[in-house]
Image (tube, rainbow, N blue to C red; front, side):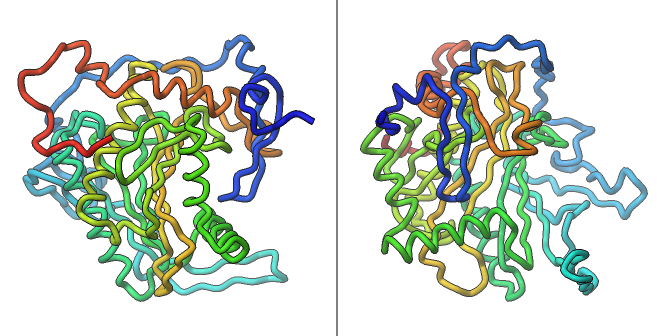
Length: 375
C-alpha cells in the first residue's frame, strides 16, 4: 500500500483528506487542474485609489449608510486612527423579542440576541492590511483585544466572531478597510463543531489538537507559508479553498485577550505578511474572508481551545478565475483541485515585498515606525 503521507504521490491521484477541526472529509482531485476554463472571468480593473471618498459611509466626517435611507442622521467623527461603532444594519439585536417554536422537532426556532460592530482599520479609504504600517496594525489588534474583553464580559454573550470580508468577490459592501465583530448569545455552528473536536481530542490524547498539528507541520515544512516567533501561517493539510491559510499561535492560549504585548505585535506582523503573499500571488488586491476562532465567552476556561484564524480566498488560477462552491460541494462535500502543498509552494514563492512596492522601487522612507518581529 502506498504511503499516503507522501505528498509526491498524493499530487497525482484523487484522494480524501480528513479535517480534524470540522471532523469531515475533503476530496482532492489534483488531475483536474488540467481542464480548460470557459466559465466566469472577473473584472480586475482596479478602482481609482482615493485617500478620502466623500461618498463613502465609513470615511471620517461622512454621513453613514442609514442616513441615506431616511433614518436618524449618523455622522462619523473625524477619526484619525481605528474607529469602532455599532453596525447601522445589525444582523443581531441586543434585545431581540423572546420566541420559542418547536413543533414535533421539525419546526424549531429560538430567539437570538447579539451585538454587531464595525471596526474601521484606518481613516485612509485606500489602504488594505498589507499596505498598512506595522504600528497601524498593532492598534487594530489592540482594538480587537479590547472589544473581545468588553463584549465577552457581558453575561449573556457566549461567542464573539471577529471577521473581515475583503473584496467584492467576498461580498464586501464597501472597500474602506474594515472588519466586523458579531457577539452572539449562543455558540454558532462552526465554532461549536471546532470546540467539540478540540475537546474530544484533549480528552483522548491529553494534549492540544492544534499544538500537535503545528508541531507536525513545522517538522515536515511542506505547507508553512511564513512564520515569526509567535505565529505560523500555513495551508492546512485539509484545506478546501485553493489558497486557504490557517494561522496558528505557537504558544497555547485560547483567545486574543491572553496575548502578551509582544504577541500582539507579532500578530500584526503575520497578518500583513500573509496578505502580502496573497496580493503578490496574482498581482491583485486578493479577496478573502478571514476570521478568528477563539474560546466561547460562556464563563468556562475552555483549555481545549487554541487561538487560530482561517483565511478563505476564492481565487483559483489567476486574478480572474475563482473557485465556486457549487454542485458536488453543495450536495455532497468539499472538493479541491490543486493540492495544499502546491498552494503553499506558490504562496511562499510570491514573496513578502508587496508587488506595488517592488514596482515603485526602494522607498527612502521606512514603511514601519516599529521594529519588525523576527522571522
